[in-house]
Length: 159
Image 1 (cartoon, rainbow, N blue to C red):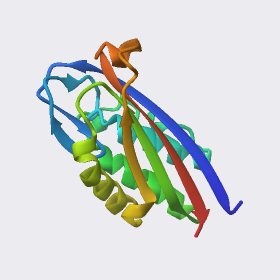
Image 2: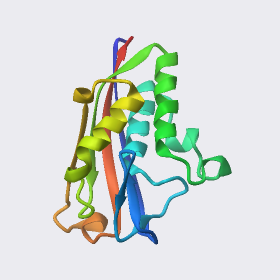
Image 3: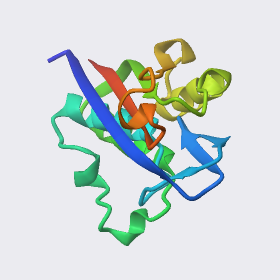
Image 4: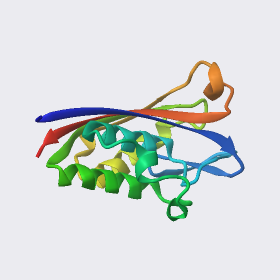
C-alpha cells in the first residue's frame, strides 16, 4: 500500500499538579494529569494513530504502564519511537491532525508551539501538522473538567 491512515484516541483524568503537557508543551494549569508518563494526551493519540496506520497495536503494547521504564517518560520519545517504526517499514508522515477536547486549559495560545514540536519530532513541515481544540459544551467528563481527551489522525505515505 502506498497510503495508510490511522486514528488514535487518549484520555487522562485530572489530578494533583500545576501543569499539563499537551503536544510536547508544558502548560501551566491549576491541575495536573494522572498518568504513568507525562500524560500528554495529544501525543498519545498521535502515537496510536501512527501505530494504527502500521497495524502495530496501540501505545499500551509498546509502552505499557506496568513497565517502570516509562514512569514520567517524555511522550515526545514515544512519538520518535513510533515514527522510527514507520520509517523502518518504508513510510513517512504525510500529515497529522490532532484535536484536544478540554474546557481548560485553552489550547489556542499554545497551538503554534505544539505544531512546531510535533513537526520537529516527525521531521515534517509544520504545514503538515494541525493542532486544534474544542470543548464538549460542558457535557461529559471533559465538560465537568474531570480530565482531558485527544483524537488524532495520521496519514502515512510510502517513502
